[in-house]
Length: 204
Length: 78
Image (cartoon, rainbow over all chains, first blue to last red; front, side):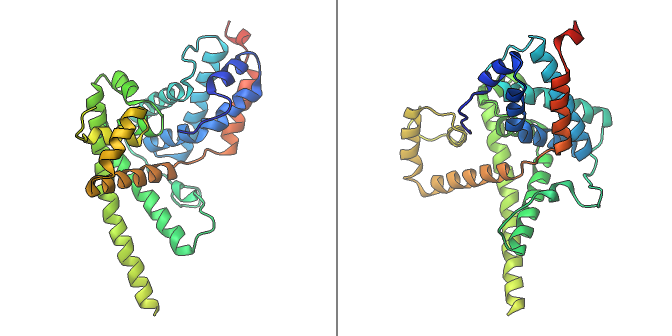
């Protein structure tokens, strides 16, 4: 976990005193993880952008009205808001939309990889795309724990309390999620290795 | 902490949820067993992969959030 010189708790205290720069620092610190949490659930870039705004608006209202009382645990708190909003949206939609950009490309392909060869960039893109698919295909209980621990930075104890299971169950679900992902990833790594070998052989 | 390594402890270790004492014991078990060492590095690799799929929202969304914050004051909800 990344360590910051100014803690979230201190930034919130400053924000409560009217320092908007402190809030900007909080947003910039956590926006990517929150956005990814939302995107992995709703799978639509535009919806995810809207839900991110709604999430922060709710957080702003709560903090500025003095109702925020989870000092020191800002990311798990705001991630829970984002998670609940995303699940609500998803349940209302009752479908999994495909993420498509205006130019027709997949939203996740907009990630940039510098200083790599074309082939390496393609492999990374494919790997990332597949990994997201694999996460979405995990059983709900495993996916939930994985997202809470990895992207929402909740501890296993907090996850256990929030989902109403024992810490051993939460840990077990995380372990199975990781095992499942690792199995799936190893299959595509073998395929990519075969592809790379074939390309090299053909180019000789 | 038992001297045998339970798989869930490896997960806790990878996610930095173990104490310093547990770390010393776990490391002595993990790095003396080739299979456990391999599992450990596989988990670390996967953790890095999970980090690598993090996406960024648009600047427009971030600006809207910051603008809302500046314009919002508690009087508007009282």
